[in-house]
Amino acid sequence: MGRIADKAGIQFRMLNASKGAAVWGPRAQVDRKIYKRHMQDIIFSYTNLDVRAASVFDLVFDNSPCSSTSSSTWGTVTGVRLETGDVIRCSKVVVCTGTFLSGEIHIGMRRIPAGRIGEHHPQVFLHPSTQQGLNLDA
Image (cartoon, rainbow, N blue to C red; front, side, top):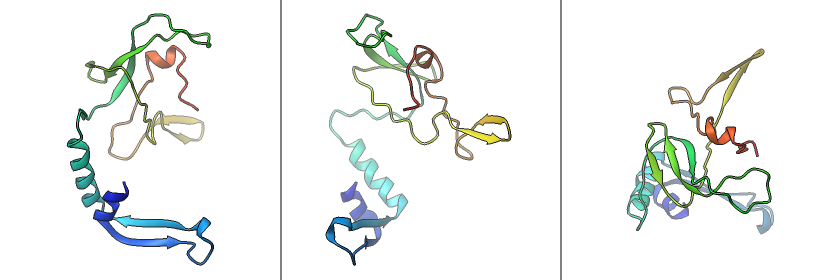
């Protein structure tokens, strides 16, 4: 991120520069379009990395018992199911929930699912995995 910020930087500042070095905080203001272009160049050219833009709906497990200390048995993750129904097979999954996972707007006693204006509301993992006990509140 730092190398890309150097390429896309507009302004660089050191916060708390008048205090001791332990509290200095480097900050950079970057051009969003330039940053995005350079970052995508790096990501898309990374060896052995397949990039796909899609919304994940659920995790896919092999349903075999696993040696776990918890009361629920998950098995081993074997992939992710997209909102389209397609399954991408994998052996590891990193869950990056983002800001609006299961986001809600509260108006009085009403709770309305919501996200950013003009964007699709992310309903990730609101189906089978959470029904099996996957806790995303932590």
